[in-house]
Length: 450
Image (cartoon, rainbow, N blue to C red; front, side, top):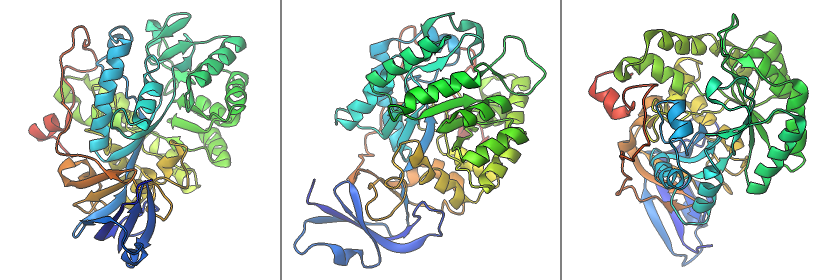
């Protein structure tokens, strides 16, 4: 551990717990915070080497956490592009650059829900090992899915692996794949509990494609090794069954009914609504040539689900912010903050409550509760020096020019040389979701920003 201390002075600290900002100093030693208070300087050992950061006029926040990201996808326009136009080595190299975009957006940690190949595990280890700069991360492997329903429908084969998906049908296949992924080094096992039907049904959302016994088998197998389980659930039955089976976190949890809500509340299963994709398509679809009917469907998923999600939150269920960055509608570095905006504008949270969801609560996705996501002694020194008042205007967190300093593990991130924003790779791109990538710059240039 380094003997050098860093003293952050004169800032207004938003500690991540939901408390109001307070003026105090923060003392950092190595990768940890050692003291927070107006007397932080007095805790410097005599003759200790230290540097100082003057945060006058700024807010000091914990590093933000994106609890639903897809770092290996590289912003595809369609599942066809993602499933058939990615290469292992190139995907890993590109993901390493995209991870730096996430970091420079003020998100010092993220959960990579699932990945193509084993890119998530390899990137996590490269970042932790100091090979490449990036946020701290946890990762799933290939999502466990069956070929009946998924976000890709008929693009999925009857067996084997395609894109981010591993097709499993029998109990033996489920156990074998979980063992394989744990051997590879995943932090989470992810299951696609619901998926798009081949022919639209009468019920809102997707269809459930797993039995409760199958989901219990997943949990029993993963939990035996201390590995948590997360599920993609976009209807009431899938959310209910995932909670009953013992899932440790649920992504989306949209279209819950009273029964699903009760089980989630009883078990206090953390939820990651992940509305950024839907909100971007609904609000900015014209900028990228999206179909009007599709925009209405995605907006409806938000409006028809916020009531039950808010009820879960009011009953003590943790809500985490996730952007689903990794698609053409959610490019890396641009929209991670937007889930906080949705939490404020649609779920009715205060900005400080939304920040809590993106910091202290987000630590659950990183499996670092009690040491990440707050500005407290003993916590990891992932910190933002921010020129703004996000406790009043949450959308300011999308203005990257406001980040005066970004610190991860007690070390300042070099913000002077940002990574490249665009590249042209042979055979890498096709188009379906949109005609263009929905960057923040595009939205601002068209006068559409909200």
